[in-house]
Image (cartoon, rainbow, N blue to C red):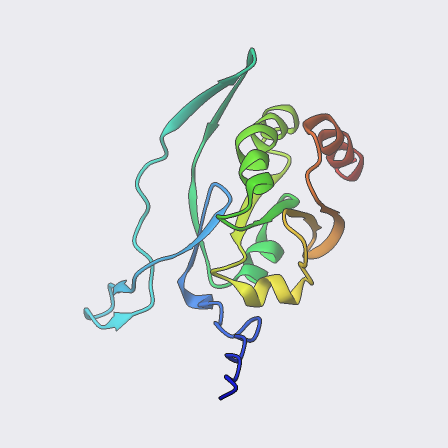
Length: 174
C-alpha cells in the first residue's frame, strides 16, 4: 500500500491577531483577551504593561543600557505607520541560530550606537505571524527591514555584523 504524503500546511494559514498585538522592545507577542473597562464585556483589549526594567548588557567590553517598553497597536501596519521614528524589524524564528546571535550580539550594539530616539527596534516571530512574513516576502532568516513613513526603506537578508548594520542605518536615517 502506498502512503499518501501529508498535505503541507499553507504558509500564512494562521492569521495575525490584529487586535491582539503588543510590541515589547521589539517583540510582537500575542496577549490574552482581557476585560475592557466598558461594562466588563469580554473584548480584545490590552492589559497595561508592567513598568520597564533596565537591563545592562556587557559584551567584550562594550556596555549598552537597554530597556523593554510595551506599546499597544491595532496591527503591525498600524505600528509602522504611527511610529514617529523609523522602525527596524527583525524577522526571526526561535530555532534559527543566526537569529539568536543577531538578537544577542548585534542589535544591542546597534541600539546603543544609533539610539532609541532615532529608530525603534521590533522583533517579529515568523512562526507565530506567518502572514506578516509572507506579506513582506521573508524567505530567509534572519531578515532585517527598515520601515520609514510606513514603507520599506531597506532590507537585509542574512547576518550582518554590527558596524555594517550601524553604517547602513545611519545612511538611511540622514
